[in-house]
Image (cartoon, rainbow, N blue to C red; front, side, top):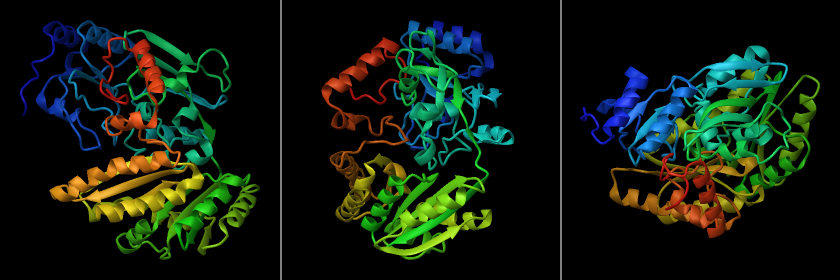
Length: 463
């Protein structure tokens, strides 16, 4: 066990221990556990605070500000970008004790929640009301709503329903000065003043600590149907994506796998899919009357040059069999490499073939497997660079490939992240994505919310 952290000012330690009691953690085990996330990075916190309400969050931030001590908000630690790691030390504020669904307003299709609510728990609570919250990251059963808000999480359903930013109506948050701000509201239309709600969503805890959120809900569809389309090459699949997204019948999911992914799910995952150059998984939702028409329209759009196989399913069991290929992917990746750099770059839909071709060339140059899959309807692909972390040469080639991946993405008119956020993993590439004037404006916004720079320092914006 590491020794108790000595670096916090004694008056701060005393005041927060008096405030929180056994919810003020200074032991080495806690400092390590709350200092790491799914990115495999870590740095020890000086202390961990477990607030139970708004007043305690305000008191923590004000006390830390008085002593210029960093404050890092934390959900469940599922970030892949190092966004919640306390590299500058200070106090990690974990919202695990603020995990209540405060209200479900069925008639207004809204829910009011605290930030520590797990996404999956929220979905299960909403289902009896015939409602759901659209953001559906793969880590839904582990990640929190607050974490989803911090990085503007998405998932497969974003193609139809939008990401987190599109499904948050209002927030209560605590700024870096310890002030409580209430932004947005509980209406689905709001043209009053600056849209600070959308500004805070995706700000990764650098502007304010979210303590309450009013969420926009959607009706649960009564039926779902799936299509699986295999293509001879990525260009044919990319043309199909463009056709699907150009016609009025919107898919609820539109997922892509490249040839390397297909080989993995066939050979390692045992999935029953055709050997092809690219694969699209397409899902539609609706009711008994509308769904057949939507599926027919999507099937027409999926057909075209390069189509190898088209399979459809309308009943739940058949749907599950079709989506087994997608679900087999992540476990298959873990069997072939202990090291993985997982990036979530985005390009315009029409540039998906160029992005995948560039990734394939990058894999050849690096002599490493790089697989691409993800949310084709948004142009948001997960590029996974696979390597052996115990092999110094492989590790060096993998990390050298990363800036080339970002350069490729930006050259295609894309951006660095679609749903994971920036954290520290992409921070130093922000100067390539934005010009100096734009970054300067972002820094001015940061200064307005957090004039002393105590909130999640070192994240998002480059030095």
